Image (cartoon, rainbow over all chains, first blue to last red; front, side):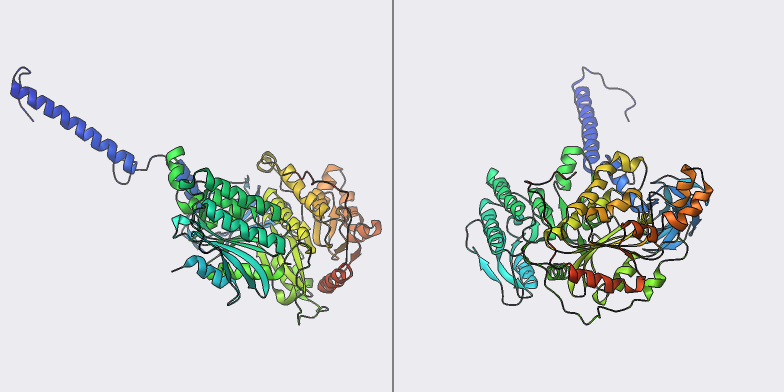
Length: 129
Length: 457
């Protein structure tokens, strides 16, 4: 960092000024390239235009109720390992006890409903990883 | 490695393949020809992805059209083994015109000869309409993809960032869109599914499916059927078990296993006769009818009707699924498809009500008024506009609830009016179906002439 600014009429100063401006532009251009290629500035940040991918991940990790009804029983808790086909909850709907079964395996990270609660169609019952 | 020809070799009986048009210039990205499957002639085309991404040029389309025309005139199945990037860009409109020529033949052949598609790799752009126009689609897990536009172009045009699998992989089409009827774990398994499917079907719409003699006795009493339904009306059971007790050796080729699971559709043999089975599944969505279940069953019923395959309906349905999600997505129109399909089918239709049959769903599931030939019921079956409690509430009468269960909804009341032909013991269901199939073997039904109907699509 310079302690004194060069005189603008000084040829040496003009060269330094132009070089500084070029460096600033180069850095901005590099940042733009990085952003368009990776969609993020720093590693670990969320990629741009992420909404559709988020929705898809949601489909895979959220177990939703396929119908509206009353939660009769929750068969799992946080931390449980669940297998494909395993029943994780029972919902009363259309006068029947409907078992909600896993489409894939995973580990339960959270349970979103309580027994006795009325839930709408599409309500997330549990989330898994 | 010649995948295109390897797939054909797997599909056809050994030594039966006769290739056509091998040397046609610019036609190398498809292999076409004729062969036999279990001794029965089929025509086949198989894309070669190595050559120009299996893309369709005018010459490729000409080759495919030739085998399609021969399949139609010979009256034999048309098998499409797909792996293609779509129309060949270098051919300009020629590639698209070629695709159009293929599709027009598939449309003409629809309902005339069985058309089965195996999608073995990426199938994109216009090329997807060939499978779409066929009767059944087999996809391969982690290997096949179907989409109109691939992820690259999607990203450029809409900014949406999505991978092949999420956009159009086998899991998407087997469980969300319903595009794929079968998903196999390998190409060999996929081909085996196609061969098995063919074994249930006639070669064309003027024939009946081949009779498959069985050692499974026609009068086999199935005691398990008497135990399957839980005493508690609110408890579900797995309808697959019922199907397994009825079919020859318990064999059943289910279609759309992972889509609209509240409705089961598939092919089986009962007493040697190919039948199409349509059954509510109480273990999923309480067995209720919804948009996808109606669409799935309606298409299956129409396929069976086109190819002279009797339809056996196993009924345990509480009604249509209610709510805004269904209504806003056109449950009325889609639900009507199921009614229409049953009503217009002229193949033998046999309906067996296992437990309940309520409301509009009762009418939709092969009721007598849909010209069903035989309607049987198990002793515990109940028929009504709605269940007892609901009716009691609406009509403000607890006494009515009791009366309901005793008389109004009982299967015997239904037989008195002729809406149900007979109440039978569950154990003898298989025997009764076989007897009915044999007596209905020569069924012919007349319909007034029309160019075609206006089914609510």
